[in-house]
Image 1 (cartoon, one colour):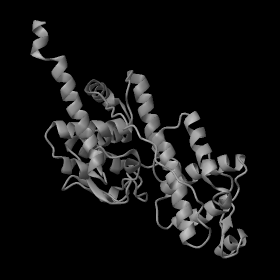
Image 2 (cartoon, helix red, strand yellow; image 1 turned 180 degrees about the horizontal axis):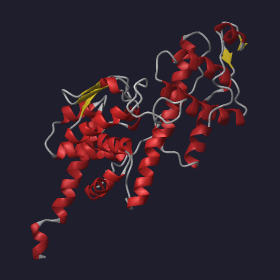
Image 3 (cartoon, one colour; image 1 turned 180 degrees about the vertical axis):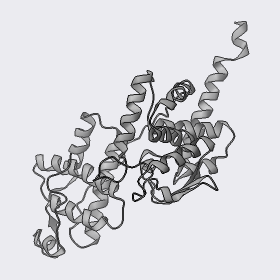
Image 4 (cartoon, one colour; image 1 turned 90 degrees about the horizontal axis):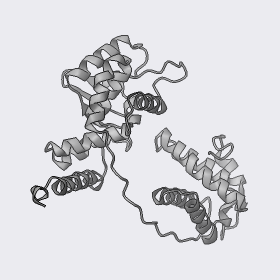
Length: 318
């Protein structure tokens, strides 16, 4: 839930009129006003979905603070931070989510304090221990089911399935692919929209190539996106449209695990099982840190270990 009126425009002059205390020793701002300014400050630096993430997480935190009579930055202290953490745990939020929200709040306060707008509130936060996310993949049996039915699907849906399956790129990266960035000679797609903002390539084979050519021939050429939205107000399909398509497919085929991210997990684990080196997988996945890619090696090693005990020859003699 976003805090009310967070996207209203605000000028620098208006920001300074919102100071509750303007003396040199201590500066404080109303929290919603601070968030509006922070969004304006960060908009040229980050992607739109990052701004949306700020609004979602910080908006929820501000609503919690307001409910506890914390309206300005000068009211933020150790007690309200501890209360927010306890409330989040009570609501069964994961530790990784709690850490993320406190981190986003701290970053906003520090950056606006460095800009001279507020005095940095004093509190300490020790990151909660995070449980590594369980890696779940689309099973080979599910992939066989999907491919057996894929010719009955819309061309755009077929192309999305093959892209997810054979490139491992993220859902948001899929819907932002542009036709001009497809190189059929080298069978590559230049992705200028990625999670970390660093452009990279993904690659496609013969089956996907035919679908891409067919899809482009049917697309409107005045719209640059590969997966075009039927709505005039939106140039490309939304992330939600991809999820809805996969959820319907999951229900229709009776598949237990199916999502764009599970396809991504499948892609990474299959690369490693087939002998790809971890550095190549890191680049193909668009990971910023090697430690993230390492999780997939740990997963495949654990699977090998389980198979050792499950199929060990000694089992035949006991």
